[in-house]
Amino acid sequence: MSWKCGVIVLFCFFLSAGVTPAVAQQQVPQGYQLLTDQQVTGGHLMATRSGSGPATGLLTLALKEVRGFFQWGPEAVAGFQDAEDRRAEVLFRAKLSSSPIGGIAYAIVEGGTGTTGFVFDSPQTLSQTLPRLMNLYGRGGGAPRAPAPPALNWRDTPFPDGSGWMRIPDGWVITFAQKGMASAEGPHGVIERGIWSNVYTRAAAAQLPSVAGMPYPGPVFDPTDPVTAMQAYNSFLNLANQQRGGPTRRMLRLVEAAPAPVVPGYTQAAYIDYEYEMSGRRYRCIQYVMLGNVSPAGTWVFYTTYVASPSETFSQNLPVLLQIWGSSRTAQHVLQERIENAMQSLREAGDIYRQATGNRERAQQRMHDKWTEVFRGSRIVEDSLTGDRGSANLAWSKDIVRKLNEAEGYNRYREVPLWKLNQ
Image (cartoon, rainbow, N blue to C red; front, side, top):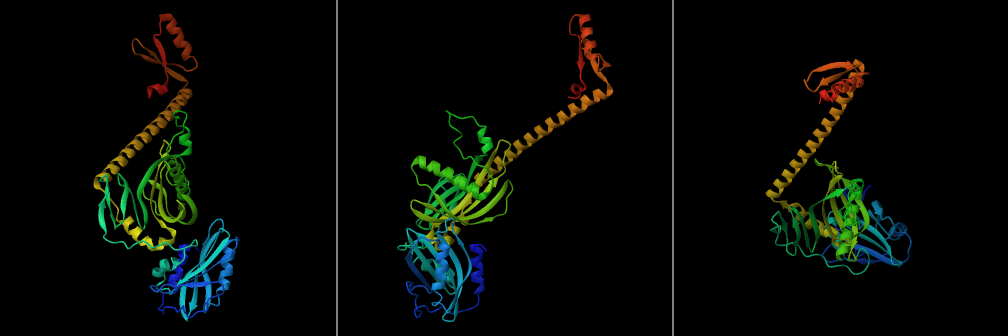
């Protein structure tokens, strides 16, 4: 079961009415501390210890250690771990003060220290209180970061190049815009909308002429699948940023990749949920990727849109990011230009198809005519002076034409193969 499916199962399982669990009276297990906040219900039970083993083993041990804290449970519902087994999480359900609860248990091993935690609340309020409870202690250890300010004073903001607009709150600015593509940043995270790039396949790029001994400088990778293409595109951007002295993005873990419906002109699409590190900070990102059809020249379109936020406040900021994402619009004149470009591409593709079909048909006709001559055993001989034509034995037609021209003293007669007559 995927992490997201587990969240849905967990919340649906406890959909019935319940009371807020009382946590202050509970006996905290040895080595753990209970973190609470007066502004929200629920709690964050956590502990640290020295160690460098696998995170899954540490989490399994922690699930046993805290059994006395809960009236029943905790029972794991779904979870995941990263490739190095340094981070592991499970969704769990339990009972506290005779009330059902749900939450997330995690284990993180880094720098010779293992951190375990159980963030919990009633199912009715967990989705609202989870970001604040997680923020009581940083997911990676250390002091929590301040939450982003509330999204206030929303306004429709035009792109600088006039190619569209986006609805953004206070503190947000549009950092880039070109023909409907746009980027924006603010206290809740970053957004890139409608970014597309022409890409060469590896085979096509190998046929391109080099300039000053250097290969083609643009993106080169194959449209194998959305995740692989996204990683290749990020590597291309990292290289470009390094050359400009800018920050690079290092992918940490893939949470989930969910296929999406394919639109005309594209072959694959997916929503990709992952974490990356940039400038020493961990970010959570949801990215939509589409892979275009490969043209006869070996080019195709990589299209992407994404939202990202610091991991520790991602769930808190996601509603704001999605609202901005969904508000973005492209100007009519840009849409018209795209339609015209698409129609031109279709016309060019049609011309290529008709040319290829015509060449194939002509080749088939020549082959048919040659076999017809063989079966008939004759070929046309033409008098170029009068235009008269006659039939000669195919086995002797060359000799006949040669002798006639020798008698005339110049090339008056010629063979006319049947396939030339049908051109």
